[in-house]
Image (cartoon, rainbow, N blue to C red; front, side, top):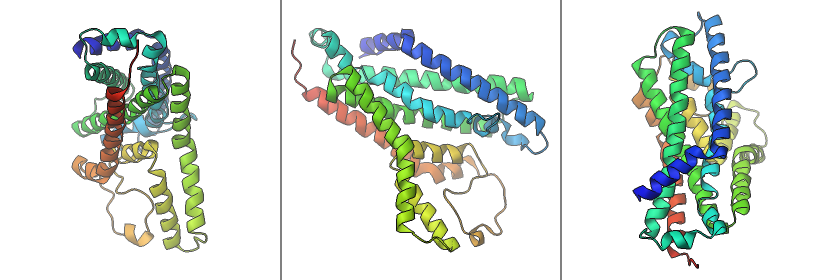
Length: 307
């Protein structure tokens, strides 16, 4: 498996598609961090000094999305790009049967391809994190504290599993369709549906179920229903996890009644408490990635491969 892993890893890092997408992410990330840093420096009195580096990831400035939101949008494209031709490309080139005729087991091939893609995602996400740290120290003039570093590490792990789901999904489509273009279009179509249309469907369904949100209780119920439906999308799970992990002041997800928030001190939550809040979302992301890869694994092990 190590031979397949290192070969695929070298192919990923040398591919033009990856380099172009990496350049887009880095350039846009640099601009987003710089704009956020300038905004934080201008509003230094209102910015909490203990969580300045987290604000670099979550604050919006200059009409740009926050870096965390931007990664949530472009991250799936990285996973799809790494996985949509993993097997279908071998079919198209007619090299799959020749590869398997070598002393390489089927499970070693698919495991090596998936782990190489996951390692590429980890390197990319960690590079963005180091970029935030380097530019952040330059912009704000002091290093992050231990709490911020731990939260950014958890954010990196969440991002790896989030993109890993889309990698596993693209790998599954690559096996199901065996045509590179069809696998890419199918993966992109599902990404668009889950990212863009699922929140709209959730809002419409919640408005249909709670037709008259005239009371605060009904409004909260409507928001809860919309959130529950939208959680079928990995993007919603990623967004909720990031919302809590990068904002220590967040004490829950969704809406709350005024009487539920009375008397609550606006003190930051500990890292362990924030993790407990998003443990269901994080577990679901990991499970989705594992299930997609397991289906791909079973499909590939049972597939008939002809010369």
